[in-house]
Length: 75
Figure 1 (cartoon, rainbow, N blue to C red):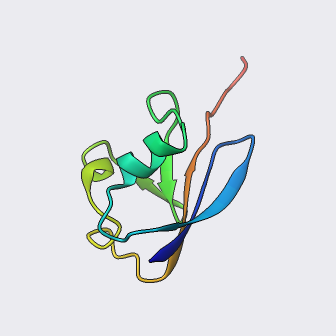
Figure 2: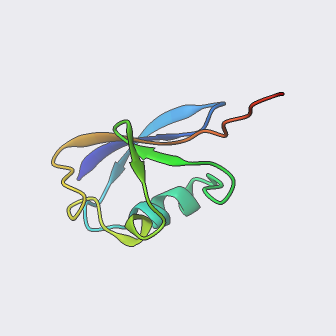
């Protein structure tokens, strides 16, 4: 198991996750809407194709941050 801090701009919480799960499945489980916000894994942008990769495939060994925050620019 790995520790994944999952969150959005409003809240973040750490969970124990099987490293063979996909990033997308963890976001779905915790109701993080990745369709309207860029997703970052430990500060690096995650492409839509990478959402279907496992944490192991993404190089996560023991812990990480999986965050989706809506960027809103007001002009």
